[in-house]
Length: 145
Image: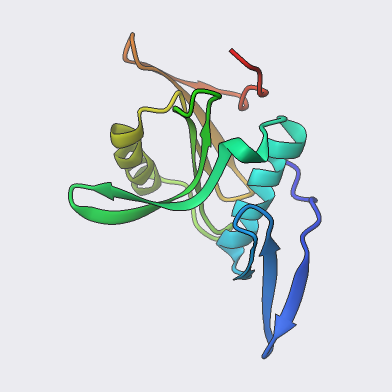
């Protein structure tokens, strides 16, 4: 993934904020937030997923606990298509990260899972009917149907 999409930033009280076009508000700039912002822009500008199908940091209830997924891309029918878990570049993508996103997957039943820290990105395709999981090189481009 190319980390070079431009972001609108401002500094308030010595803290940097960036404007999130999806949430339409200023968000405190953190390493994880920068990865999240770059990734949704990659999905939108490179992979052609419409902004209207991308949700960012929404609440999901798992086993009675409130959790938040980083990014979720829906298909044109409104079904979860891709779950993306973003970490800071300093955070290693490991079993704990995978377990976290799999707990979301159990609830959402998406076709793809992506784990990224901006430096390394892992894409997993899930065939729900065959209960088959495979690593793929990259996320497929958006296409209707």
